[in-house]
Amino acid sequence: MSFEVPAGATLLVVGPSGSGKSTLVLALAGLLARDVPGDWTGELTIAGRDPRERSAASGEVGVVFQDPESQLVMDRAEDDVAFGLENRGWPRDGMRARVPEALAAVGLTGLERRRPTTLSGGQQQRLALAGALAPRPAVLVLDEPTANLDPDGTAAFFERLAALRGAGETTIVLVEHRVDRAWPLADHVLAIGADGGPIAFGAPDEILRRHGGRIEAEGIWLPGRARGAAPARPISASAAPFVVARDLEFCYPGGAPVLSGVDLAIEPGERVALMGPNGSGKTTLGRLLVGLLRPTAGQVRLGGDDPARMPAADLARRAGYVFQDPERQFLARTVEDELTLGLRPDERDGAGELMTSLGLALDRFAARSPYLLSGGEQRRLSLACILARRPSLLVLDEPTFGQDRRGYEALLAILRERVAAGTAVVAATHDERFVSDFADRVVEVREGRVTPGGAA
Image (cartoon, rainbow, N blue to C red; front, side, top):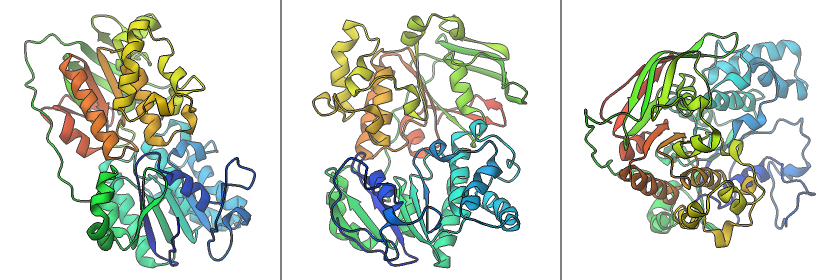
């Protein structure tokens, strides 16, 4: 792979899941040290220097990882932003002025004293961005920075990115699947193939004109491609709901209610999208529906039973939950062991076919570590582990995060198959494409309140 990016330019990096995009991010950030197992050949320089040899205090490169939680280290949001400045030797007065500026730039004013662990996934992503922007780095490297942001947050992020690009003081490297917004900002595009090698590098218009067919064949999203429509499924008023929540309320210890007065009923085979701003309570609602949290007040019934009181083995086959961060539910050292953990013999028979349909064929992935897969591959593995049990209710938290086009289409096909068999699917998502392609009802969650919603 060979490319050159001038100072102040914006490079958009696209490629299928597992093609090496995040590894490139680590290399640019100087985090592939000489003692990391693997082979390094060729030359990489930023401002004429090898990033692996640069002092960590230089502040020349700021990076936002695919998993924002992995780079949040302090007990308060404002302290997390100040942490990087302090390590770079900023004076106290300078930090006091810069921290609120950085938080305001990403829309987190008012959350300065919140614990990062209590923020939503999208808010954590904004906080990680604030920490990267605070030192005013010469190079800003962003790995899927909008994956967990709501539409307003995504729009605000790209406005901020456009302002940075317009100022010409920061070189931006952006790895992004949401290419409709990212493509117009790019000065250069680097397209990487599934084998980790370059497909093309050049100006965005030239890349589309000369290499669009090859890029699309690799399963990479391209701007302006038409979206399919979700197959219609009339909602029957006479169908008995499988999931029922009545007057539901939940609050964390010592805090205000995250959800209050929630009434919701979901039928077998229904496809429900939970939508709303970051921090509105979508993830909390999803966890309440499958018994991972117990309500402070009100009740949830899953097939007539309280999911929070069901034996784990019974609950796992009645309801499945796929976390926003898939690493949180991995328990085994290999992909095959993770997939088959706790499965009955009759469930194992179809698990291999399921993995193949998701692009994770066991003849290639069985011995791999779940923790060394790409973000998109981890997401599909976590989904396969739940789907193998064929639960009657499937709750997904940001299911399309990190997915290339092929992974996305495979996800749609499998979900539609399960819905046709009677599985109810509830997806907390900001992905408007996914809502258009799959959901038949949108439930709005806003400030802890729920609007049952109508057809998507």
